[in-house]
Image (cartoon, rainbow, N blue to C red):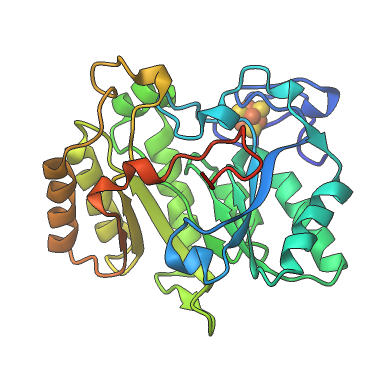
Length: 304
Ligand code: SF4
């Protein structure tokens, strides 16, 4: 796979030969390690659309957040033993869903698999399918890699998790997360601007939506993130402000991460967002934390 002989795909810059089976921080070699290809209806309305989006959930992750809400598939331990698919198998699974009328394909946790994302999209095009493509990442991306995706990705759906480098180090082992996320977001914004274009059925066909998950005790960091977006990009950017944080088993006893956020914390961030002039995007019902817990042990992770 191109670019994996000496992997510098993400800011971790491991330099390992994934084509030879080596694994870096993300825990993945060069195979198509995918936990699930399924229809997901729980994304933001213009991402899911009326019928849902075909999400391709890659395993492993280049961040490894302590509190990861998808820990079942992202934790790097034993990633090389994950089920590995061929390109043909993955493409056929996606096409099966597209043939049911699904119009968009979302690549979830794609940062450490960007060559695979390109290959899958090219394969779909060769087969005559041109779905809307969504890049759904944690934001720990390199701007130069994002440049290389121009023309292939229709909708960027990145997180912006931390503004404070110390917090990024503490929770995700990535002190440089904020600087790389800012540069990646600048590049996504250069490509897409602040307008999310919808098709006739209300599904996004091009644009940028920035997600932010409010963490317990970190409302001020959330507000710094929003301030940067408003000042350096635009208050017209669409924001998805999420309240769904819940403590996963790994952080159930953590002194800060071992609780949900409070209503007051979420409203503090919401009020600041409104005062900064943001006017496009989505917020969550405060009691949403129970509704967003996928179980990747199940065939259909988002159905109970
Ligand atoms: S993609 Fe994985 S192996 Fe490559 S630099 Fe990032 S963490 Fe390291």
